[in-house]
Length: 231
Image 1 (tube, one colour):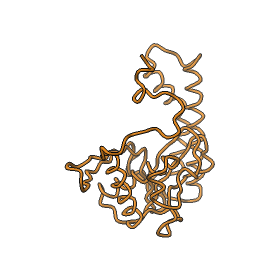
Image 2 (cartoon, rainbow, N blue to C red; image 1 turned 180 degrees about the vertical axis):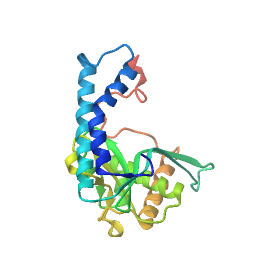
Image 3 (cartoon, rainbow, N blue to C red; image 1 turned 90 degrees about the horizontal axis):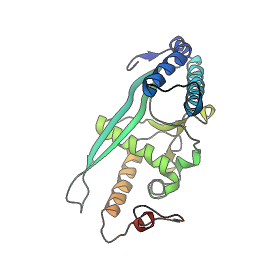
Image 4 (cartoon, rainbow, N blue to C red; image 1 turned 90 degrees about the vertical axis):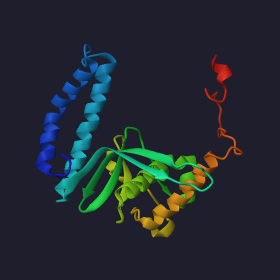
């Protein structure tokens, strides 16, 4: 379905065919196993419920006469970034679940099976989004947006966000910051330039041998920092 319009009838047909195709996929993965009992049945039931709810929400979107075009699935993005004081370039890589165009608006979408709080995606500044760990999901989306802009030489504004299978009724949750009047959720050249600046600062810090790695608020042993406790 890449690079073709996704229509309401097409999604309705997907919804009808989904249980059979899902069973086929599970049987291929399980080989001699069964989906009729135990853990496999639980996993299959959850997957079926997620997909059923997801497709119904997609149908609702197209009910409003919107046009949806899928541009990419599992799209690998990469960009070699050069940073002053580091004598080699660093290859940044990201894998985007879905890239689409909804009513002419490009969207970079990451799927999550767990719950997502909008507060994890939206910050008052790019610096806090990059530096503070409670914005890790927002940081991931900004990184995908940055990589896409660089790899595709994309100059227009676009959106990056999450679709949570646990919170499908919340719809497309966009990442944004309030700097540069970006609170409408659209990412533009100016906001991504600010992100690049903060990203380079973070990478320089990571490669600085005078700054030690340490856990923040760590309460349990770590296999890397406390290997002796796992012997």
